[in-house]
Image (cartoon, rainbow, N blue to C red; front, side, top):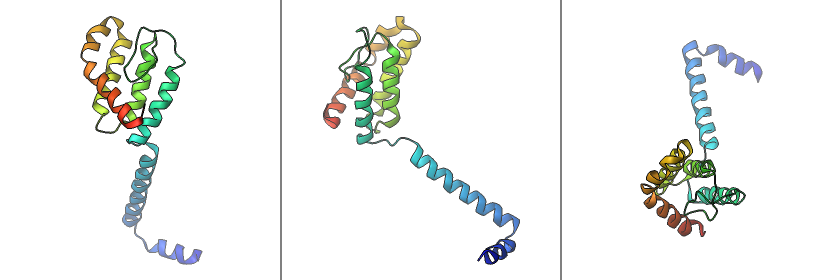
Length: 139
């Protein structure tokens, strides 16, 4: 068996071997990317939402909030992390609003004095994400 394989490999030219190796590498990369990257789906979003909600339940303070979460925090980074994780899995129908909230808390995290003005531009997204989450995750 080994001799047959060795004999067939000897008959393959250098260009053919490079082409086969490249094709196998591309297939392997596609498989890894498919299974390594988070899937954008309602089920995955709801799972991540519940995880982030549980994490936010352990935070303290009441300075910052988002309509979709029942807990508040004195640290905008708590919400930045939560919305970043949600944005990675949010279905296309809600992802732009989740990204808006991620950007809002990124702005506030960098410069809290911009919080009020930045928040005004995210009110619609805040309500949209809350309504979508309630409708799709039952929360």
